[in-house]
Image 1 (tube, rainbow, N blue to C red):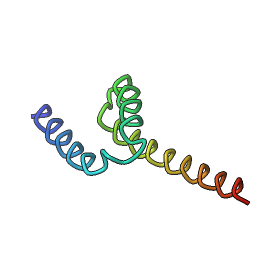
Image 2: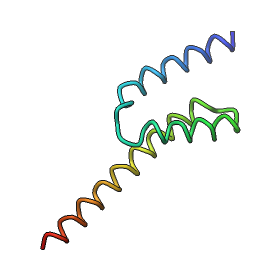
Image 3: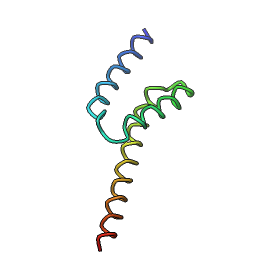
Length: 74
């Protein structure tokens, strides 16, 4: 029974994450988070958190790049 619930939760998380899979940083973050989560026996949760963090960091880097290009134009 426990195995079935883990499979159901994993499938649900993959469906939720698939809508964000094209987001910048998500795939790289999910891979890193999945590995770290696997070590702690929480691979799916690690991948989901890694996707969120990776996406956040990519947006932050993009904003910094945009700000630098605006400063160079002045």
